Length: 515
Image 1 (cartoon, rainbow, N blue to C red):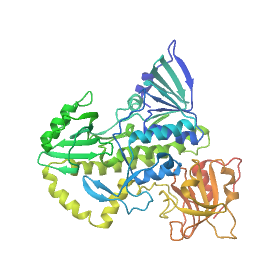
Image 2: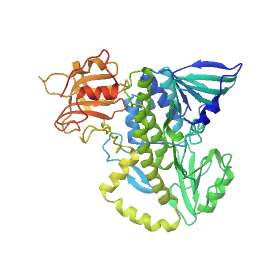
Image 3: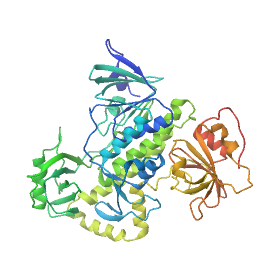
Image 4: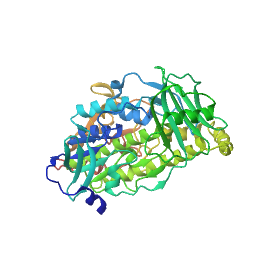
């Protein structure tokens, strides 16, 4: 941790109030709230601090991809969302890209306003016991060898909040990242788009329409509000201290499309650009970063929100195990080791899309060639899986079985209690040991018993023709990734070792070997 962070906090001043918790999460957006819920599932005491007095009603992001839907399904949250609109076609840099034949029951794009996701996650996290403090802004940060102290400015003055760990989920301009002195290298913006939700206008719907002067998008919602986005080819981004005026959006829209929207009523307006930066490290001692605090990118195709939510799903159970005292050595460090490469790869594909999407007419030949390549199923599926987050494979070592390190697709199972699915078994936020051995084999329940507080065991039979064919067992982390495989071609080491590696030493100490 840099000296900058130590200077930022300072000692508690006269009149300041101090409170203790295990984890402070800075930022009550979707990423921070999902993280808070995951931490509570793992038993950690959590306080979320947020400078805004009320949740935002703006839904700048509205696209949820297949992997994120799987994660929400694993926690039993999808029924709370109610009906969701699904689209089978996405895009890569504005070029059509089919997403409906990916290996997931949630293949496609799910159009769910960010405000709706945020409200769902807030209810879930608070219902689990997370505390949310609004109108509290982080103004200082003091890390130490056994914890971290946050200094907050709130409606009743300044206060200090002491915790074992603090996580910044506070966006691209992260105060946590700045106070912790974590470098944020990358490329500054070269292009920007203007965006607004507008009532009272009637313009033709457009999906990434390239015109002589620029790019235009218009989509009308059932409530009559139209979302417009516009980019003028060759126009550099504007240095802004606040959001653009609607008049600026209307002027650029008129220049690009020849249409007038200035008579409409803007619900909100903003500008976003193709800045591409990634934190040099996602952990600095007892301070961690997730979501846009860890990476800034053009929010094309909804990948930014999904990337952040998947960060939270990876971090939550690891940090909860750490503060509970049963995490194995290196578990918390694996958050950076696993998610930093995923973020870097996602940002590479976003930069490529930005070139294809926002480049002027000199990129037209590239677009034509790419459109031809997308007609080939392997190319299309490769890009679609990358965007959907379904191609992620963490390097966990221990073998080369094709399931190791990957998420297990939602799979139907038959247990002694009837039919169920792997998602239902993961709902409690613990690991899952699936005992798939045939009748008459020695059950693995006794082997896993010392870890029963951290991993549930289920004897089950899997559907034929599915990903579990030929396996005698499978160990899942709480985020649904496979870390041990039993049977022909298995991997991840012996079962005892895998349980110790991912869930810590057994309580009480009891070791048995398992093939």
